[in-house]
Length: 197
Picture 1 (tube, one colour):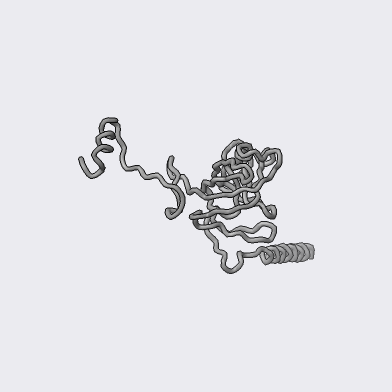
Picture 2 (tube, one colour):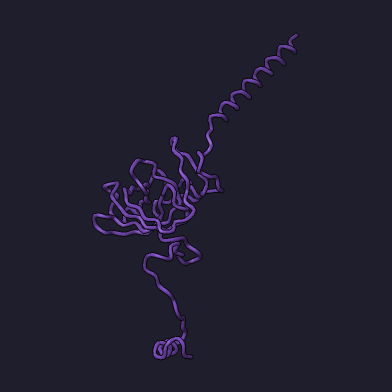
């Protein structure tokens, strides 16, 4: 009789735990229609009940809004891409730009500029479009005020030691038409044009 009672209460406990797990699984929501799941930092994610879908490309991306910064409270913690956050690195958080995108941040009231790499998600405060590291915030002078209006322009991604622009229709470009180790060869090429040997 004792074994039967013990087995019965074990079964009841199992059923209660199983029911609770199903209940919690039912509460977890999937991305809404139109959002899609990708791998790693490109998958849709939810913060405070709102869904965000990271962009496939930073091509032509520009935005104006409020920049803020984050520092010591996050220093040494993991960012969205798995790096360890350093408040002294030139990085930033953005809600949807692809991780790894380099962004030019221009302070609108005084024209100060900094360039940062997106390695985290955020800020999740209404009206804010980018969260700069302490170092980047220092470069444009917003450490004391905490926030300022900025324009952000996506520049592209790093490929090796080069920055590859995503938008080939807009902006200023440089094209390398030659590389010379002997200065006189460069002068000769300049004098006679590119079609002559």
